[in-house]
Image 1 (cartoon, rainbow, N blue to C red):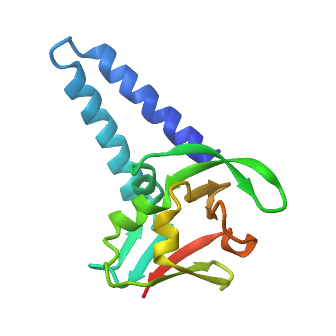
Image 2 (cartoon, one colour):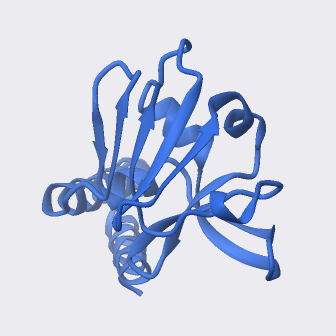
Image 3 (cartoon, helix red, strand yellow):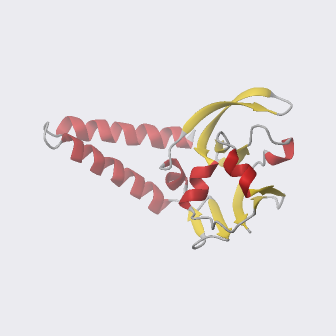
Amino acid sequence: MRKSIILLLALLLALTAAACGDDEGGEATTTAATEETTTTAAAGGDAVLTVSGAVAAEKGFTQAELEALGVETLTLDKPNDGPTDFTGVRLAAVLEAAAVDDTAATLTFIASDGFEYEAALADVLACSDCLLAFDEGTLRLAMPGMENKAWVKEVVEIVAS
């Protein structure tokens, strides 16, 4: 719900800015308005996900930073539930933005309750539809083709090793 409101406000702000500008400056005005909204959201938000371990530098992502990686909705075959819609960002895009080192072999996904799931980095990167999905104010993994335990709820950290 919160994500929808933020996205709606950003869209309205961008449309308002575009309507106020002339044809020559409209695109620049829209871009500036969108950047201002993203910056405000990022500045006001706390990191919702940390990527650490074998990375260039530990990276904390805000909700806005994750959304900037490209939000998508995919229908994925979830174990025990069948086809289910998930909205989020591609897990590979998150790992790329965090600059996970090429020497890393595994990823450990850690939930807010301490639950951990380990997966081979190669398997995760081979999964083109794996998502870090937005789930009612938290993050969860949507990992088609992987066991049910891989679909970790309330993910707060990814550790590359």
